[in-house]
Length: 245
Image (cartoon, rainbow, N blue to C red):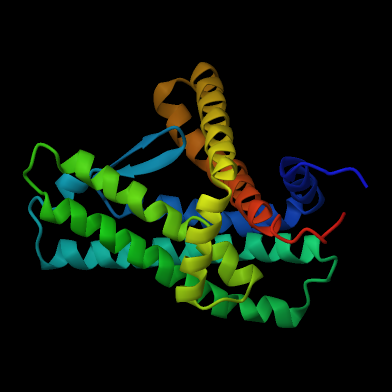
């Protein structure tokens, strides 16, 4: 049987499960809208929410801190659920098994683990921003810290769902596979940049700059991010050479 590229697997899985993926992707929309309605110092660009980390610490009080913690908690929770659900779809699509009620019930366990991974990553980045607050290199250092932790978490959600790994083992698996197939990460990154850039440009032409930001945010949450998460999962699943379509 001829070897089928991972990208083709991802497109096939996405098309075959589009309705279910769209249903779960509503959680992405909620996750990205929470910071907007929580009055975070954020800005929208290329269909994504960006946090002005330096502004978070301005005029910080108990009330603002409580809002930030609550918003981050629920945003990461919805994000974790959507990521887990899509990974479950990929896992059962590639193994040709049905997604039973028992499997759906197990999503809660996986969501808790993925939430912990995302929370740890978020805390590390925020701590880097806090420690370097006031420094002219704060943004650069925070970005570098984000790059450093990427290999540890990039495939961690997929490992948690597909391998049923604990958090520590999932992080180890992510780190190992990230560098073993660094070309996969580069492919994913290029594909993500192209998708976000092309569709952002299209929506700016159609709807104007201000309106396009919010339209792109919703479109990104429903279509682009779910596909990129699915592609991540398919890349991780490629370790299993015996899996066939």
